[in-house]
Structure formats: C-alpha cells, structure tokens
Image (tube, rainbow, N blue to C red):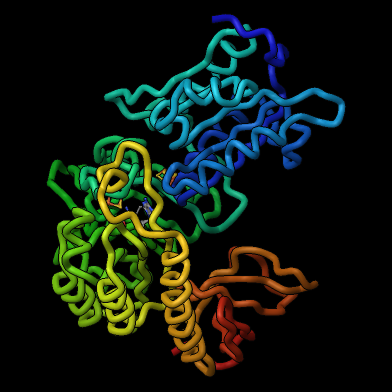
Length: 450
Ligand code: SAH
Ligand code: SF4
Ligand code: F3S
C-alpha cells in the first residue's frame, strides 16, 4: 500500500515520548541512542521534531486513550505534522489497526522490533506501509549499538523481558512475549559501559526480573543473585536495585543477597495485587496471601530495614466488599513504604475481561480511595520515621530552587538538599530534617556516617 499523506523528507530531528513502565523508558532511551548514532539529533521540543516516537503502554485503557489523543494533537498551526511512529505495547497489541484508526500514524513498531526502526523510517519516507510487530527469536539487543555516556548517574538495564505467568487481567504476556533472559556477558558489559559513562546506580529491569537465569562466563548456571553479586564487584558502581519481582521467583539466594550485598539497596517492589485468596486464584497469581507474607518475613529477617512496595488492583471481576476488605488487611499487615494501586481495567483478549461480575466503576472509585488513604498514611509514617536519621543519598538532579539538589535514600525516598558546592552524581551523607508525604528534606551531615 502506498500512502500519500506522509511527510516525505528524511527526518533529521526526533523526539521520543515514553508512556508506561520503566522498561518502556529504557526502550525509549535505547531508541534515542540508536537514532543519534545514525546522525539524527534529539529534539527537546516534541512539537518541532521531524519524527515523533510515541512509546506506548497497553496495561490499562486510560494509557491507550492517551496515545490516540496525543496523535490527534500532532498537527501544527501551519497544518504540517511530524512523521509519527507508534512504538511499545499498544503497537504490539493493535498492529496495523492503529494506522487505520489514526491515519496520521506512519510507523508501527513493536517492543521486540525497534532495532529495525531505521529501515522503517526509510520505508515511511518512501510512502510505504511501515509496520513491524515481529517477535524475532534472536534478541534485539544484539542488533542495538552499545550504551553511550549518560546524562544522569542512575540508569535502567533490562536483563529479562516478557512474562510466562498469564495473570488473567494482564496484557503483558501478549505484548512482550515469553520470558527471555539476556546473556550474562551482555548484561555485565552493558553495566560496565554505563558505569564508564558516569552511572553510579543501576536498576535491573524485567517484567519478572527475579526469574532471570543464565550461564555465567565460566558456564555455571546462575540466578539473579549471582548476577547481583557479580555486578556488585564493579568498583565505581555504588548501588543496585531491581524491579519488578514476582513473589514466586524470590529464591533463597536472592533473599540472602539482601542480607550481605551492601550495594543491593534495601528496597523490594513485590506486588501482591489482592489480599484475598479467592481473588488471587481467579487472577491466576499462583501464590496465596500466606506464601506472599512468608516471602516478606524471610527478607525482613535478613534485612530488617528493607522498604517494601507493592501493586494493587481493586474491583477485579466478582470482588465482594469483604474480599476488598482483605486487601486493606494485607496492607495494614505489611505496612508498605509506597504502593501503586489501580482500578481494574478490562483488557481485550484477557480471560478476566470476559468474566462475570464486572464491578461498577463508582464502587471501584470508592475502594481505590479507601485503599489509597491507608497506603498514604503508611507512606507518611514511613517517611516521618527517617527524620533525625543520617543516611547517604545519590544526587540525581537539580531541584527547583537555586543550589537545590535532589537525591534518593537507599529506601528510594527523594531528599531535597541545598548545597551549591555539591554536584549531580555525588554520594553524600545527609541528616534528614523533615518529611512530607512524597519527599524528605535534608542537609549535608557534619557527623561521620555510621
Ligand atoms: N510484572 C509485574 C507488573 C506488571 S504490570 C507483576 O506481576 O507484578 C504493573 C501493574 O499494573 C501490575 O502489577 C498490576 O497491579 C497493574 N495492572 C496490570 N493489568 C491491569 C489491569 N488490567 N487493570 C488494572 N491494573 C492492571
Ligand atoms: Fe502481568 Fe502477571 Fe506477568 Fe506481572 S506476572 S506481567 S501482572 S501476567
Ligand atoms: Fe505498559 Fe508494556 Fe510496560 S503494557 S506496563 S509498557 S510492559
């Protein structure tokens, strides 16, 4: 099919806009690095770029709606528009349907095919249909250029991708495909390149990151704890984090690493989704409330100060008031340092979308508000408990005021300090002086760190 309404000039500038999870952010960075490597220039002004890449998320309906409204806004005052590429999970789920629904979309590229973006751009320039939602057996990572110098001291690094768990509400197994672990050497090499480029903290990413498995450089079978221990040996890497972990993949070895790998930060994002066993079963979560709580107990036994965060869905089909109350109960039991919580969103093609007992949106609103009130109270309490303590933070970015810098504690809380003599990338000891619901205020410590 030939398309005539396409901007036919080869784009010289581009802008990537990522929606969705950290992995989408990572993919967006890799696309940007690849296009820059081809001689294109990144534009901070999305409205003026020759090519706009919308790196999309399909997890909830709201996220998808946002993409289509964004596409609609791309036409400039003079009637021209950029070349538009839809990448990410909506691209994978909807494929060429997207260019039918939004005529101004020139390129559709799935999350496992974006290394072929340069060829797709050439096709689009020629006015040809440019859709690629293949899930090739070889890894896209082999075809991408190496990492370049990073603007920030923190970076994401995808170590595994995809999901074999098939929770009944979730699109990820369809949009990202089956679980695939990247090779040990590729991961270590990428980490070293990031650290050489100034990175001091790496967050390992995967939809079930702790399901990572592979052979090390000596041919021994390793799990994620081996990888963490090996990364911890990179001298200038100061901090390691990982997300998202699944309760069933929390191995003894990984739990032990939390007790003795100093660079592994005391923070665990471990979603449970619901506090009721019947709902967990209907969700096909393959763990129950008890086994989840036991995992947390074991981690806390080796690392008592670990901050635990979670994800929750309210209003899963058939969820009764009493079953929702169980979710409040587990929240009260675990006392999370922070959480993400969502109204259930029926997704096309998932088993739960066809289940009886879909819950009224107003009831979901009410449940979500109650859940979030409780979660926010715990988060506030968690933050307040750090006031008066001394801790190290890694300075990540500038704050709004002159001389203000923002860094994170080991427990992932943002801390604002005013210290014009310090720079982004510095690790500093600070005393926490006050706490709000979402961030802390600190000052450089005069005491020696404990
Ligand atoms: N792999 C991770 C999370 C992936 S998606 C895990 O298993 O925990 C991130 C979060 O989005 C999920 O934890 C879940 O809370 C939420 N989510 C996924 N599908 C959803 C849906 N259909 N409606 C509402 N929330 C959803
Ligand atoms: Fe989705 Fe479940 Fe897989 Fe997480 S484990 S990505 S919620 S299917
Ligand atoms: Fe969204 Fe895809 Fe991530 S659906 S949450 S961008 S894996």
